[in-house]
Length: 106
Image 1 (tube, rainbow, N blue to C red):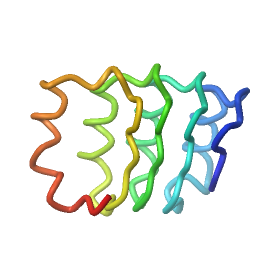
Image 2 (image 1 turned 90 degrees about the horizontal axis):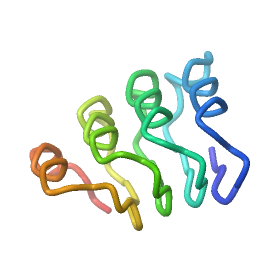
Image 3 (image 1 turned 30 degrees about the vertical axis):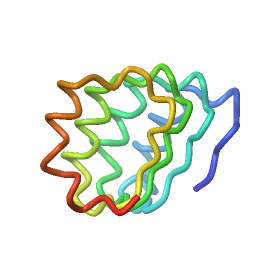
């Protein structure tokens, strides 16, 4: 599912998507430049969309690094992620995610 650049997509919409019947079946989710997305939406994705193999959160500047770390821990099939311009990633978050990096191809 590609919602990149949809400037009106917010946490409520993403939480509803993740909580829907389709959430657990999603394998690809592209949210690049969805500037209203925060860590709450990513946390919902982590909790419900555990079949993800691809996620793009590029330029989602409101997303907390801790939510991204939770996403990596909750989605064992994830092999491709774009975190370009996710400025809230910290060294602590990256350290927590490090064991999962071996499966990430891009």
